[in-house]
Length: 309
Image (cartoon, rainbow, N blue to C red; front, side, top):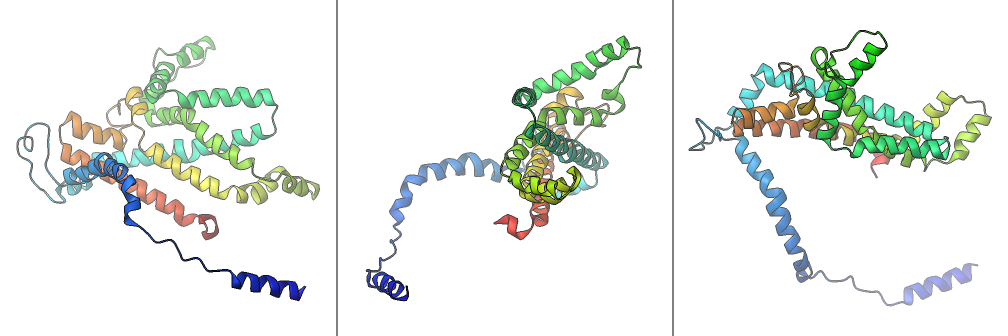
């Protein structure tokens, strides 16, 4: 065996060594059109938005005829404004309630239930959940407005059952829009967790069941650790998506009553286009982008090193 190994090694050593291919700058020329398009349509608007955030650019009044550089004034104005902090608080409540908890917990529960369900139940449930996902945001907002409004379907149903009517759009608007966002966005988490569960070896679960482990113990000790990378990825994506939800809330409540459901995207829209303060509105948009960046870094920080590879 040793002779065979030495012979193979000698053959490998005797083979001519290939020089690494030389890098030719000309090979990058075909990618130049794509780089130019990315620079113009992606980097260009981002750079211009950063520029606007440091100016007093406005649609009307001061700053409309002549734009001036104001430094960090827009950011100082935001930090001193109680309405900005109210929007930050509502944005975090909406994101945690509907994205982090609602969509992920419901998506995980549906994925686990559908894993062992009959085929027709799997197809029917997936069709309904995914159907809600592909509905445009504006249409979903209108559907939920007609369902929860004073003379909507829910109050008609409660009246038929002789139960008191609800006014969630007035009394608890942030809870109402959170329910609507859970209804619309759960499909993404369900599909992500279903794909991850399909990669888990059923033999592991069966072995633990034979050893006497219950359902909760098997989920906590086997399923949850194996799904950890998918869970963190899904949490990060749903958080970033929920932070930017605009149309759903705008159609259902318009940010009201008052500012009771005015999240940061609606506050930014109001400042930039209703009040015409483009510079200030763009500064708020950058702060929203920073919140999303901090959330993404936090998820990556929590993820163990072996799962990042």
